[in-house]
Image: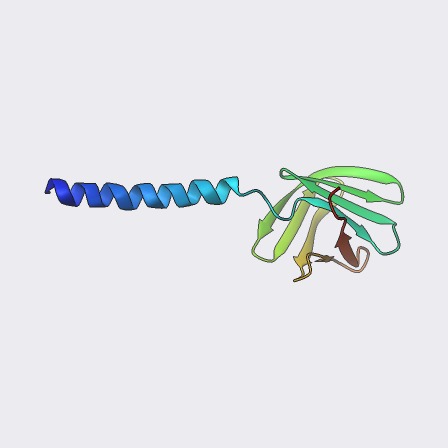
Length: 105
């Protein structure tokens, strides 16, 4: 291979790597605190951890994001799927209902 071609291949790979690094460092836009309109349910998502509070009792788990779905995983809560709405709220199962994101202060 010629030196020019190697430089071009290296440039393409460095560009791809940079794009992945920037994407990983952009932060998780779902992180935050969500609450039900009744105030009985609160879900806090922070750095891959999920804290679910219902009726004053809190349990900890993890979460993953798959496109417009957020899936909570926990020993006490099992797997709970939420859909992220366009306004930033989460639509969950009947027990959770719709959770609104609390503005960060």
